[in-house]
Length: 339
Image (cartoon, rainbow, N blue to C red; front, side):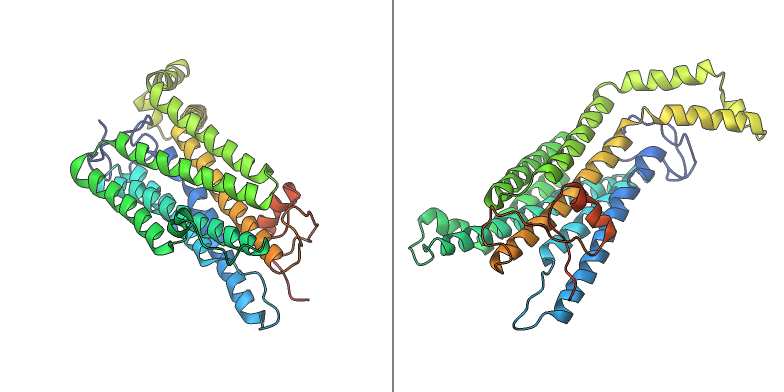
């Protein structure tokens, strides 16, 4: 086991990438830098959301309320960026505290997303019920339970804290963490499908994000199950091009270029780093999709769209990065500008 700047590995997981192969300061180079998008995209989302909230607060009046990004979505961006930062630190150091900094934000960040989706579903359900003239009807026991926001928040918190406690003190097996996270992911997917059905939204953006995520998950499994073959591929590349430790450390131009070329070929087999790229991008696109959900609901509530199944074209004004996806899905806008 190679040791570098951060010392010996203390994490319970050592992924398929060779440790400290690229640099003495980063344990898993490709698994580390592949988190860059997972950090920068949600940071941009935080910046854009804060700008949008500031704009809405500034120009909204008693008679005209501009669309406002919900605070819950802002926290989802923050949670996603913390996952990226934690994953960067974990793969850079392979230290157990940094491993927890990666894994625990995944649980708590997804918990925030589950509650944010729940609040949206509840708001849409109550609004539609009132529209149908059933707003004054007595709620069923199930509706009463479902409408108790503090109870739902408490249950989600208990789950997240319980998973963290079991993982920290009782069962430190990463399989437990993966199973607990998988259950939460299934919950998020079911909530998102419910939102699509409730508002009759176009599905292309969400389907694309789902495909990104599942493709990343496939690569993650290949990296786990076929690690020995991937490592053999990397060793064979070195043998084929005649690379050895002496040649790698040489300072002349030819071995440096040759080493860079081989490293590039080897990076193709770093499937865990590609898992970061695809699932991180897919997760960020889910937050874009949820922005659309909130805007669509805003339009319905303000009678900009009379019915939830009515389609209407709105000019996409605001963040070019966001609008790129809304234009792609031929969907409605994310932002409004004061006329």
